[in-house]
Image 1 (cartoon, one colour):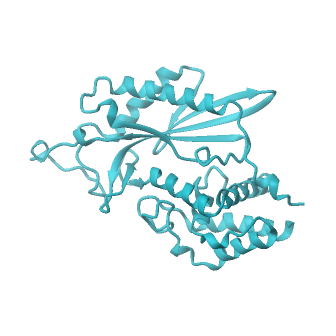
Image 2 (cartoon, rainbow, N blue to C red):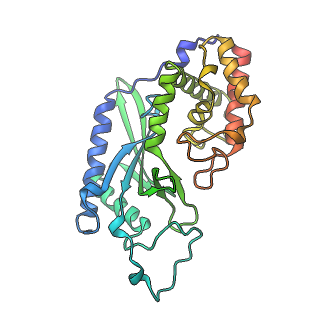
Image 3 (cartoon, helix red, strand yellow):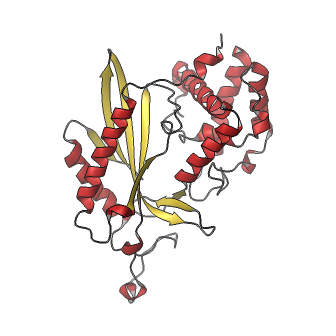
Length: 305
């Protein structure tokens, strides 16, 4: 039997504030150590903030994810035309990446070493395409908690509308990502207020249903919760008009689902409203991911309520 309250209540993580504060402190310490001998960067050029299911306070299962951005304002890091003259230009697929004294690859590698020295041997760290992953396990009252931290170093980016975001990329700079986390957070809170709190409840409900269904369908784990873009549910539900959110009864839930399924998903925008959701050159989300997730939710709701 489907009980809405069970799917709209976030899972409380023990000592959450202490864990976040301690992790942030260690990352800031490691970052300060790395930039100590880099005169083109100062303390005020660095910003630290989170953007994920913790920030939106929608903890859905026992695997907890923190995505910490280290935003770097690199105005003094960019080479002047006189410094790059007569030098062979870099082979980059996109010209928005300037010539720099210190590349993001070098910063990421340096931060990785600094984080290892700061966290010690008992913490697992490894480099991913865009970030540094930190894995930790906590036990409380006999329960195991998996904590996955992503540290993403990125450069500040301002688009042609004057909107500030961030830019990051792998070592070969062929897959540049641009997003606007701060603006997305602002829009998420605005959407939730305008729907009287229903937006976040729907996001959490959809996440929990999705996780539950995948736990019971082990043979279909080609697409897992971890492989989905973490904001797939936030993004799709963000595009549902406020007046469609009328409640949490079966009719209201199906009203939301039917709107999404009958809408042309190509018209959906990203949460920051700066790009198309599925035709975004710098942070793409695949149709197949979204459609798969929505089908899982739709089938469960239709046959269990």
